[in-house]
Amino acid sequence: MSDKTKFIFITGGVVSSLGKGLASASLASILQARGFKVRMRKLDPYLNVDPGTMSPYQHGEVYVTDDGAETDLDLGHYERFSGVACHKTDSITSGKIYQRVIDKERHGDYLGATIQVVPHVTNEIKDFILSDISDEDFVLCEIGGTVGDIEGQPFLEAIRQVAYDLGRDRAMFIHVTLLPYIPTAGELKTKPTQHSVKKLQEYGIQPDMVLCRSQCPIPQNEKKKIALFCNIREENVIAALDVDNIYQVPVAYSHEGMDRQVCKHFGIECDGDPDLSKWEKIVDIIRHPAGEVKIAVVGKYMQLLEAYKSIHEALVHGGIANKYKVKIKWVDSELLEKSEPDIYLSDVSGILVPGGFGQRGTNGKIEAVKYARENNIPFLGICYGMQMAVIETMRDVAGVANAYTTELNPNCEPVVGLMTEWEKDGDKEKRTQDGDLGGTMRLGAYPCILAKDSLVRKIYGTDKISERHRHRYEVNIKYEKQLNDAGMVITGKSPDGRLPEIVEIPAHPWFIGVQFHPELKSKPFDPHPLFVSFVKAAIDKQNKK
Image (cartoon, rainbow, N blue to C red; front, top):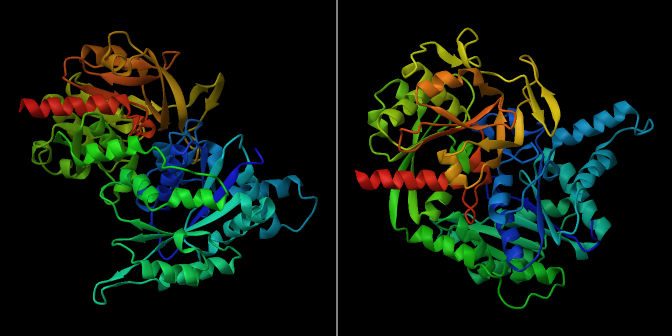
């Protein structure tokens, strides 16, 4: 780590879901626009080792990195806004921290000492914060949860110590709060923010900047009050107003002077304005699209759409590339099991079936695949969605009535089965049916070879790709001939040819299923080619109606 690397710690108060991750990612993108090199990290206080086994209804999407870490969805914001790939060393939880401490204690590394939160747990957190850093100018560390949460206290103590160890010229604290508006009084209330900052001060942390989320402009008098009672400079009270789309946030924060005040805190000269032209261009396209296209996402987690956060953003990116607004129609796959699919899908120009686990809604996903295939509607199946596409073709075209996945029926024709062995970086990985669920999937980036003259080869513009995976079950390569005879071609395989990665139906206008998760690598300024092509196909379908 360079002795010039500076650390910015982002905490949250008043309420949860304030958008600390988006704020962190936006600040990183503004600092990049000023020419700085950034790194981003997430410290989550919950006791799970990682979010891999958590319900999507509780946690939302599980974001996967190239090196196979199952992480919080905020790392998706980090990558989409900064373009900097995150690693395993950029995500930590209380579960991992305590697991490491206990493992060391059992191994005798503490030489018989009494193990305590301070210093043993806090030292482990500090080691994480300071590890795997090279020549970054700024490392932004977001602390999950809300100030006052009991499980978050060790993390606050750890970042206090990091600032103490490095010196305040290399550390900055930003506190994100909410300024609620009381309609009957016609006022924004600053008291919750004051109390939140005082709670933070109880832990020995004096914030250097307060980022105030608000639905309406913050009067200067209210900024003065916050500055006075929170003991910070008035210019460091930054308004974070609601915007019409998230890609407006970096521009809005910079206009508020956030990046200038960060540089001022560290004594860095920052003449002129950052180059935010790429963000301004993206916002302009979103606000003034050439048209609108409706695409259905048929899934099972419709009660919490953050379970499909990267899917949503990747479709938006595909729209930006085509200068179109993508209107997403969220369709609960269980509804397609009870009614004719035409009721829900007749008005869309594209159908996407995403990943998911378990029996619920599976038959509805298969119905969505069938509807797209029979009606020549552009279709993209991702992970479980690809597996359902293969099962639908085997059943309804190849005539194998009991074709299914052994995940749900061990006595079926095993078109999709449990993968027990595969290669990763030259080594063999093995799993068993009764093994732990956490971290036992094929996770992270794997190479894929694309077939000559295939649609995906044309879309990617290359014959070898690398994409991120998160699954336990695979399409069985032994059914390749039956699939070919039924009109479905395996056009992407693992380098050893054993694992099908991509399927297509060449006779269909646009029908692709992929075992990996392309949405995880899509960015607004670098949209994923599959989503660009999929949205373009949906636009073409719409224009032919």
